[in-house]
Length: 116
Length: 113
Image 1: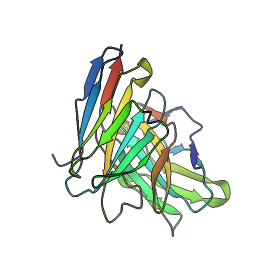
Image 2 (image 1 turned 30 degrees about the vertical axis):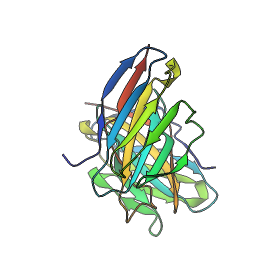
Image 3 (image 1 turned 90 degrees about the vertical axis):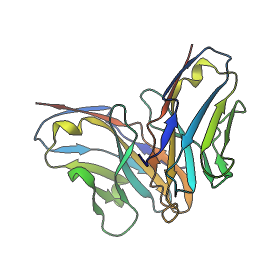
């Protein structure tokens, strides 16, 4: 399977714990995005990387959230001191270099976080 | 700021009937417009996109959409719906050189026999 993969698919945690999600983009894609989707809502942009550089962050990304893409390949999204409001589906997407201006995104299946 | 409105939260159609899902966008410049589909347990998949040129765009799975600048709309259509089309559909807007794509809240499509 050469699509975008995310791990874990589901995570249940207690409030106050830290969680980390991993995303492996399509191998030739140099842009990687994180979105968050809550029930009844569309995906909301969190941040994106071009290679290893984090070029834009949404105001939704509080200081408890940190994303990295250390070698320009896979990315991690860490949430510290989780709150119940963090419960959501965290989506990763990547895009092709040649069409990276177009927003044509290839999404993974998402990582669902439940904070108890 | 760009925004997308999908006025219909839920739509039910009979298999074989035609379908139109509404999308209105707000963006000051020429928008890039997209329709994505999300089936249960699957990632979002691009159905079609509009950047410029012909305002009627064809996509995968027999879908098409028409860009109407005067109405700020980009409605999705399909002449004959199949049971496998049951899913959630998201309209999205972006712009050239701008990486943030803004999604609507989605329309959930139910197909009845």
